[in-house]
Structures are given as structure tokens and as C-alpha cells.
Length: 306
Length: 132
Picture 1 (cartoon, rainbow over the protein chains, first blue to last red):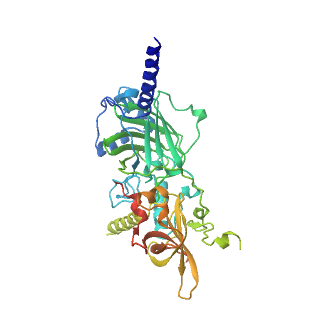
Picture 2 (picture 1 turned 90 degrees about the horizontal axis):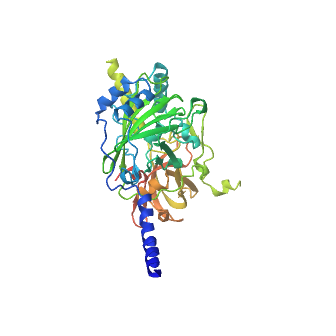
């Protein structure tokens, strides 16, 4: 009897770490079921954005198409493991697939077209100011364009989309909850994101965002901006994201873009990103609107006030 | 004709924008990216920090006066992806370094590449953005 108890305890001790490991990993033995919704071309996705007047409408349509989606199980998670980064070989633009002979593929309202033209004119003169120069986070949708390290952590009730830059995490609630009530909403950098799983595809709607720019040399967006995104593995090493941006003050129609992130074969460890750790990186906006170092100082003696 | 000129203008602007380095935080407008400067010197200090790292290099002029130059690069993880390590630039390391200098003449530049004198090893911070 006593021997049985020893065996039981030993078996428990041996099994527990295995169970703990299997709960902590994102590897799934079988993976999620196939998607219900169809795969679309870029042109079809652009048209899909046009067919829906708001991000909320598009999100609801995608949810209906996916028959409400299906909650993930721990033993059926998609494999989003690894460290990824955005390739820069085709530049920095929000829509890297836009024609080379246009400043942007976005259909801008006249006011925001003027703003973009001025930004590009200033850039030609060497004048540029980036709103994140103060160490503010990039915020969504700009978040998608940054070229740093990324990790994607999937659990049945939440998915975390992590950007190394300023330790930035987007929490995607997939437990069936709705957005915050209107009276509790306020603009925040990454907004409020809800989503559902259509097989291996994560479909998301984000609102409550802050105004910003899509990237340097790209248009502005307002705090009315909302996005719908579909995240899925395009292949073993490629994470693909279809994104539709809605922002009535700046966009005449939804702006569609496809983003990709490639899994790195030998990534470094992600370290804490302390944006203010080096005073030599502090900058200010000059009277003519460009960027200048606040107190660039490479002399130890000057730093000591001598 | 007019539309062709407008298209060409837009194309130039887009190319300029897309050629800008992928700096995390502030614009690089304070640097003149049409110019490069190449200097020989010795490392004074190596600051591996986010969002930008700085390599301080003491450069002796023809008059014998030493000026400390700052070369700005990306943060530690991007440099790690470029194979640039914390131990690569100990104080006193001799090197030749090239960068885009500041428009206002201050002794600072965007670090484009460097060659360490002791072993000829090359360091290209922007290689850290290559996805492989």
C-alpha cells in the first residue's frame, strides 16, 4: 500500500511538468479547424472595404460569414510561435503594395490630401517631425508598420500581439466580450480590440484609437479611426495581416493594406525598451517644424557642467 | 505633360521617403543624407541604448585638436541582428567610420558603416533590418 503511494507520488511528480509544459506552449497537436470564410485577392479585399461603410459593419459581416466564429481550445491553437519582423525591402509605407508612382493608395479627403502634400513638400526641404519623437507609442494602425521584433501569444480567450518597440502589447479579447460601452470610451494608443477565430484566422475590430500618422511620409489619421484586421499564417514563416482602415474625416473609403512579418531564424532576445534611457536621444520640434537634438553632448566635461 | 511632371515629382518624394532609415523614434531630418563623412578615430564610449545607440569616437584633426563625434544607430536588438555586439567597441578601439553628418555642422552623424582597424571587421548597423 505504502509502495503504491510512492509510485503514485512519483508518477504525479513526473506528469505534472509535462502537463504544465503542454498548457504553456502554443503548439497545437491538431491545430484549429479550417476557416469557413473564403480567401480573397487584394482587389476583392479592396472591394470588400468599399462595400461596408464602417469598420463595425465590416466586422459584423465577417463574423456572419464565419458563422460567428469558433472559440479556440487549448489543444487546437494555431502555431504563431517565434519572433517575427517586418521586411523593409519594399519600404516603410503603410501600404507597401501601392503603385510606385503615387504618394499613397489611400483615398484621402481634400483636407488630408493637403496635409500629406505639405508633409512631402517639407520632407523634400529636409523638414520632418515625427509625433513619436517624445517616446509616445506608435499606436494603431501605425503599430503595424514598425520594423522591430514581434511575438504573437495565442490563448483561447486572449491573443497578445507584441511589438518590441516601447514594450507595446495589443490585447485582443476573443472570449465573446463586446467593446466598452460608449460612455466609457476614450482614445488610447492601441485602442480596444475584440475578435473571433475563423479556423486559423483571427478576425479583429479595433476602436478607441488616438490620432496619428501611418508612418513618416504617410497620411494622418484622426481619433475616429477604426480598423478591421484578419491575422493568419500565409506560410510557415510568414504572418500575414489584411487590414481595413476606416476614418471618415480623412478617408473617402476604407483603406486596405496587407502586412507581412517574417519569422526570424536566429532572433536575439527581446529586451526591455527604455525609450528615455539615453538623454542624447531627446529631441524637440524647431520653429520651422523640423527635428533637432535637445542637448546633444558627446563631451563628458560638458555633461559635468564644466 | 503636366501630369507626367506631377507623377515624377511624387515618385521622387516617395523614393526619398522610402529611402529614409528606419529610425525608431525621431526623424533623421537633422542629418544631411546627401552627404557622407568618413573619419578615423578611437572609440571613447559605446552606448547600446534604446531607441538609438551612440558610438562616441575621438577624432584628431590636422591641428592636433581632438573632437568627439557621435554616430547614431539603431537600438540593441537591431544591432544584434546586424552582428554588432556590446564587446565590439571597447574604449580605445581604432576604427574608420562613415556616416551622414548633421546639417548644422555639429560633430554627429548617422552611422552607416565602420571598419575596425585591428581585424578589418565591418559593421553595418542597417543590416539589422534584413529579415532572415
